[in-house]
Length: 86
Image (cartoon, rainbow, N blue to C red; front, side, top):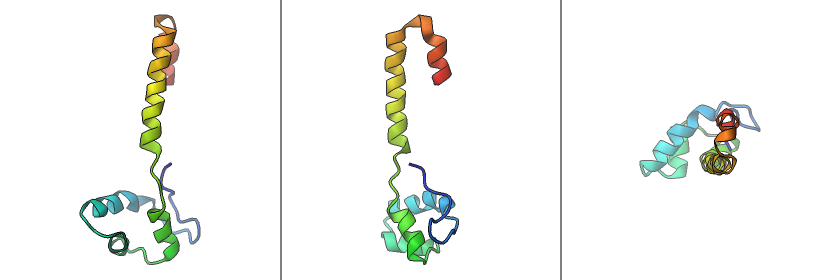
C-alpha cells in the first residue's frame, strides 16, 4: 500500500527514499544502480524498495468510483452523508 517508513529487518529509514528511487528508475537507471545511488547497500533494505507494490493510487481510484455510485444512488436527500465520506 504505502512504502514502510523503516526496513522490517534492520530498522533503517527507507520511506524517504521511495520518490527518489522512482525518479531514478524513470531516468533509466537500473534497479541496482538506483539503489546504490541512494546508499542502500544492505540486501534487506534493497528488498524493501524493490518488492514494494504501490497500490494506494489504484485503491483511491476505486474508492472515488464507489462514492460516485453511492451519490447517484442515494440522490440529493443523503448528500451530506456522501460529502462526509468524501
